[in-house]
Length: 346
Image (cartoon, rainbow, N blue to C red; front, side, top):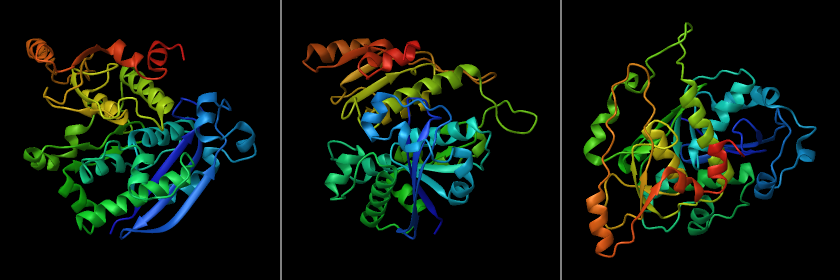
């Protein structure tokens, strides 16, 4: 069975490149085989009060610790050849690639999976899929917001999901639950996602379907400054709310995108905030989010803007369903520091 590296980062501030603690738990054949933890001195020694309040790590704790490039020689062998897994995987994956980017450290592309996504498919009736809530439901004792403790809890969630499904490897588990992996490159992240059963065959489409159309002379994909800025903004918001889910349990319909991101990234962003993103409006819908035009890569086919189902919403509201229509601005205002970060004020 392929080796799995379950990771968890804590950050000094809301920048994804500010890793200050990392925990890695290695899982092989559905058993934890080793555990590793590092305190890391960030390149910029600014620790935001909000982040300190979450994890308790201060500049004094890391001032004599090695920097990321100094511990990378210990970390890289654990990640190379492993499938990367985390709870709310988009956050930790972006911390990884952003921190490596600060030190010009390259790594081979890594497959990525999320225990929150797997848990939602395994235990579909739970009221919340935050790490602490899942741990409580599964009787996992851990100290939240310690990187190794969080990574170990996520590893146990993964193992319990595998036991319940009876699957002997991750490929079979993902197939049984209807989820597909994401991927982490040195310069970008593609999030894991769930797929409809009638679309399972599309998972086998060539990897090139997801690749950018423009490449540098060395063969590495490039990105526009606009989409990098959009993802950076989303990363900062997710870092700010890590440990909480301001949209937990809310069923939302997203029209278009958010923050100018690609639509898949916008959906992953909402899912990491706790939302259940629906393909269409129904009786469970709480919010209809009027998003922004999604990013269009050069030469890419245009993505049609979804029409707002205004008449359907009006009828449902008239019938007593409490659906709220939110602009992007109103949505960000519901998220701690979301509007300030989007404006560049935070």
